[in-house]
Length: 549
Image (cartoon, rainbow, N blue to C red; front, side):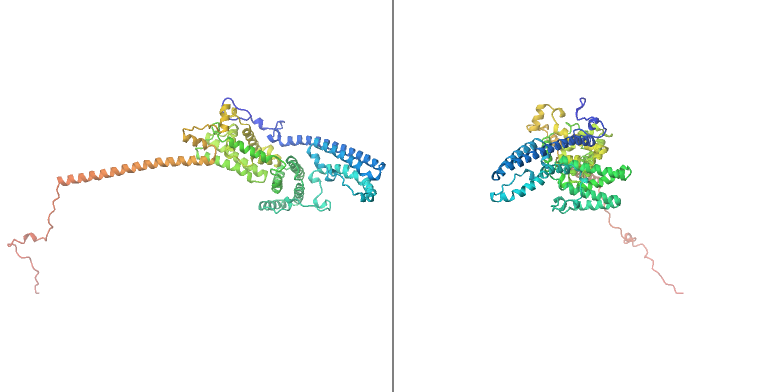
């Protein structure tokens, strides 16, 4: 990765994401910059060289063992019976010492080639029973000892390097009692049962090929149950070989229809990896857990890194952008809850799409690749996903390789690997800081935040943790509400004062009018003739008269 001189931030040329061999597929830091196809080719070459060396070592040990046996047998015939066991024991002890030195000098895989019986020293026989069993032991040694050491060694080599689908099914193996693998005999979880039912329902649509696929998948799972002591790389090679063999057979069956093959392989991957998840995710033979802890400590130590230092083109004050950032953080954390590599990749893809949306809304234009990687680094620093290295290694080892080589899943996963690599190698130059300031920030002696400005401290802290971001947002809302409440209270007091003054002014005006124009109240009006009561000269009122007809 390189840094652009004309601006702050992180820039990765798109050509750096591709395979170093120039095949056009996406590379991976876990594969030394190669794609899965080129990596498997290199791994197969190295594996063939190792196999040749192991075979040469096995043949050499067989010849030495045969020579030691012949020497001990010839010496036992010339020695008296009383001292028969001592030279044989001494010769065998020297041979064991030499064989142990050869094994420790070679790779550790050679240790698996030897059975416990070949490393165990012969038991001492009581003197009173030695003479009785001597003749019988000679016959057994002549017939079976060479086979029990040298030929057993070669046979074990053939068994180890035989592909899983080339081995016989468990019912075709030896009739000797065998303890079933705990991963097969333990009670399946609800999710495992559901995946198994879905897989069977899917295979019913394929009819005859479906039965063969189910048979081979079950046989492969059972064979993997007996390989718990293998390294993570060897487990990955077994799974990838099974994928390759199954894919080739499906291509022949479907006449080269890659879409149908991909659909079937997705179901096969889901079924197999759900069943094998507990035994192959972060296996005891790997250092994935140690890398997880180191990465988590590194991210926690970088809690002071701000969005401005990474030159991230995202404005979290915009509600839509803030929602996209929260969703991206949630997706990258939820990745750990899935068992199938394809499902984990789906969460990485969803996280990346939320990041692109946040950049697009902030800039009001489509996001570029130069803006995506710094923002992805910022999201990883804020989320600090659990078991990040284990999940990356799990996807790298057991995902269908075609998904990692092309398409948006492969592109986003490659960028995630680049982001983690950048975080591990982040230094003062990457953040445009002086080495002194970088060391003081890393040691906790100082902080890039302004200590005299609480608002700036809260805003800077909100870039580190979603909880702090929510607290800062709530404080801002409360502050605005307080200002608005103060304005409402001032307006209410002003209105109350104006109402009191208006009431007083109205009362004064009414009083002035009453004083200028006093109110005269007249007496109540009486009957019509009430005013003529004292006038005696008026005739009496007319009275009705009745005239007789």
